[in-house]
Image (cartoon, rainbow, N blue to C red; front, side, top):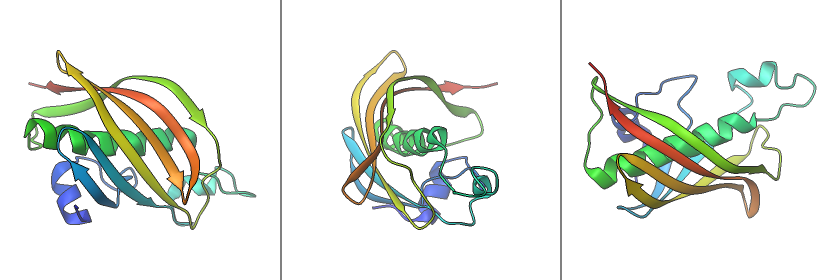
Length: 146
């Protein structure tokens, strides 16, 4: 379990781009379950779409990637610093099954499938209640910058 204060210490993202509000479960080296509370106050809803607010699919993928980053940092025992960045390296098989709207709670389940040569491969899905909203394979990498 991780609250927002612990998440802020681990992830470099800040409003309006921090998309993980709480970690519900963390199984070191294996999986994470994280939560994003979707509010009408999200800045993207003003334009996506004014007549029917829907969370953009790419932001669901980003939320899963942020959860994956928390799992990766915990797995390798790395604390975030100004010299480390965590990037997307690829997204495969992304599918969107249900719109995510204001008032929804997006629960992300992300499992680490493998770690090789600094590349992490994850399988993720995001649900609202019992309904699948989004699923994808995510590849991410950590890099040290000068």
